[in-house]
Structure formats: C-alpha cells, structure tokens
Length: 285
Image 1 (spheres, rainbow, N blue to C red):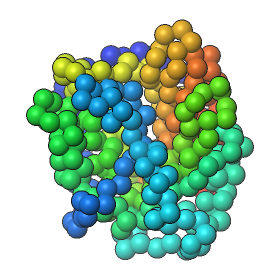
Image 2 (cartoon, rainbow, N blue to C red; image 1 turned 180 degrees about the vertical axis):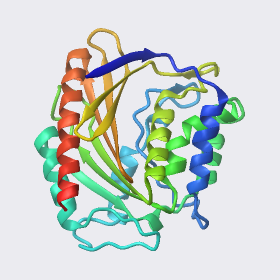
Image 3 (spheres, rainbow, N blue to C red; image 1 turned 180 degrees about the horizontal axis):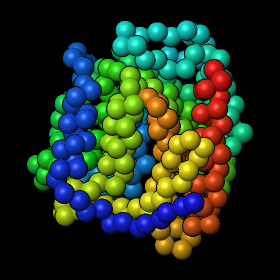
Image 4 (cartoon, rainbow, N blue to C red; image 1 turned 135 degrees about the horizontal axis):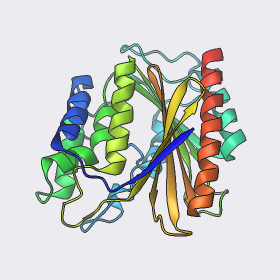
C-alpha cells in the first residue's frame, strides 16, 4: 500500500531544532577540522553563490576512498565506539546485492566511528562560512543536518558508488549504510537526511532554490521505506529517487537518478527490492 503527497517544504522552527538537537546529542569530542568528511547529498538546492556547492560529496567520498578503510584491509574492523562498518565478507555480500539490482559499482568507501573526525558544530560552522550571513540559523541547520549527524563518533559509514550505465542518465547512483549505536541514533540519521533534502526552513531564503519533493511511503517486509523524489518534476525531467529505510540501529539509503516519472516509479520498486535483500543479507550475517 502506498501513500503519496507532493510538498513544497514549509514547517516550523521546531523541526530544525529537533534535528539539530539530535545531531548535537550524538556528537563526540575531538575533531580535525582540516580533514572533513563530506556526505553525499542528492538535494537539488542551488544558491546564488555557488550552484554546485550543495551537490554533496560523492566525488569527495570517492577521492577519499584510498585514505579510508577498504574491504581488503581488514576482515574484522573494530572501533572504540562499538559500531563499525561491515567486514570483508559482509561488504562483498552487500556489493553483490547492489549490483544485482542497480548494475556495476565503481568503488566502496567505509569509515569506522573513530574516523568520523569532524563534529556537528564544525559541520554547521563550515556551512555558515560557505553561505555567509544571508541565511537564517534554521536554514543553515537544515543544510548541514545530515552532515552534522553523520560526523558523530557513534556512527560507522559505508558507501557503494555506482556508474551511470543505466536509465540513460549521466549521474551515478550510490547506496549508503549507517551503523549506529541505537535505534534512536538511526532515527536521527533518517530525520536529518530528510531535512537536508526537503530544507523545510529555507523556503523563504532569498537566493536559495528549494526543491519540490514528492514523498511517499510503503511497507517492505518488517520496515517502512520512504521515497523522496526531487529535481525536475516536469514531464520527462531529470530527477533523483532517494529511498530511506531504518532497520533497528541501521539506516539504508539508495539514491538513483531517473528520467521522468515512469522511470522514477520503476526505481522505487527496485530500491525496495534491493533494501529487502540487503536487510536479509545483514540478518543472515
């Protein structure tokens, strides 16, 4: 059963306060601001200062791959925070499932919790420095929401990057997995990811193009998945299908470009099937 709504994001300040509070409550001490970890974001937002600056960090993640843990470096990663990315065998299974549904992958990136060096405060400060003084604190918190939560010390991160060989698109796809310390941490990641896509407190900011987002939910086994479709929602327009699922203390995200509404609907089904396989594989492991 599906339930769809189309929204132009407009919510109260309290929403951002909750996201920011969740981000800061997860933050650990000790950071290296000279070594940021950019989180890919599929938001279609553009600013007058730098239209490409908000496009996230898929390329940054790929470039950093050589400096982070790889599936061949350690079969049993551990971390002081108690959360860690999948080991070599589990990562191989994850990649195999992804390739079955989305096609060949180009690379993988993993980070243990202790490798997340930038704090939430620093992520928000960096966003403020990039934007200048023209945007409200609530809007800046939206723009940095996922990065702030993602860079905490009790979250391990895994990304599988794809190649643009499907759907006649020029943009790559990617799949993210966050392993957190608790279901509360997983919910914070999910909520922050939604906030950074929908930008509910940025609708009235001058010079900022807030994307229109189509949101829908559906059941996938024992979990509920949320789809966010954004970009050019006109007939035949290029858009991104972003699918999120929370499974206990773990969060999955699939991002894939689509040309037009028909391809977007096809991708939703493929994302759900992929998430079911990923969850089944992780439970078996």
